[in-house]
Amino acid sequence: MRDERPLELELRGLSQAELELIKNYLELNHHRASHGQASPPIQEPPRSAKVVWLKDLAAGRGSEKSRSVRCK
Image 1: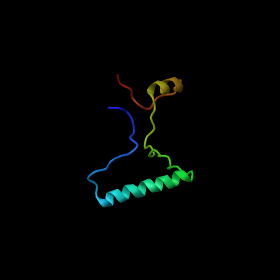
Image 2: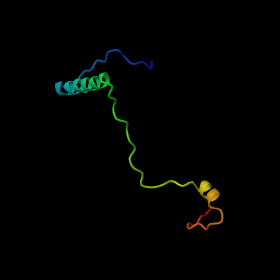
Image 3: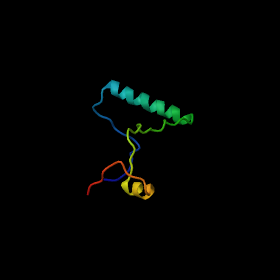
Image 4: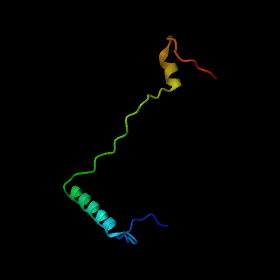
């Protein structure tokens, strides 16, 4: 298969409501694009934890004691 986008797309088996939904979506996005409005960027969900790499932790600590126990 080729990695090309067709100029036309044939949709079979969709209900009239589904076709109307697609039509409205395309019109809305065309209207936004013609006025220079882009879709808002997708934002990542807030992180609940901070990742700390042990190699970075050991290099930056110096003589301070670690509160966690490290096992091999």
